[in-house]
Image (tube, rainbow, N blue to C red):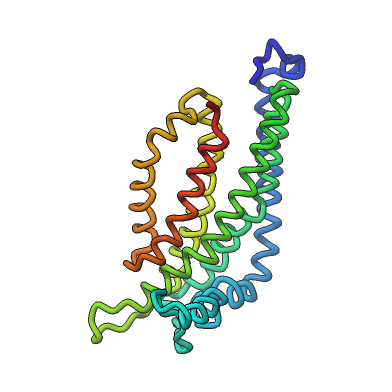
Length: 266
């Protein structure tokens, strides 16, 4: 990255000019997030019924797919039960309204993520050499794609696996599971956001390699330790206990590590 002495574009602006540009950048981002939030708020009942509450019934596409697969492969966990349905209950007067608002906000951040990246790019690009702009632009694009891919894996695979197991788990037959709205949404949003961030590992590795903190040999040397850590992380994310589910979570994490090895500097 170039200094202000090397780039005439940055020489023309004082500290207060940069601060003003930064202030307007945050203002535009907030405006876009607010507009997205309002639109999502209006459509939230439909989004809730068709998408957010999808994993609570046996009609969810992953359960149907695994149900058909488990009939041919007996070692797979049983997702074939057509009676699987979890009723989400509300125990606080204001929870439904507050969940309506909070979910609209968090999803608006997900929707507006590309615009946020675009605004950050506009802010830092004047301080970059022309040769640097191409690699940083590619990094931003790659990070955006990986974030959405992580959110998609979290929604379609990780959260349904975890939720199905925990919702069906019984310590005693005398205990009835009643899952509150706050508990469900906390797990739902956390799992999706966490997976979105986890999929940024290759980008983080690339940045650290550019800073000279890690290299390809370092990642190769500690690969076996990384495998153990990723297995523990996968076991924590999906406490189902069966090898199939563990591998479903572990494999994407391991592939992210191998992708990091490929893209970092020697």
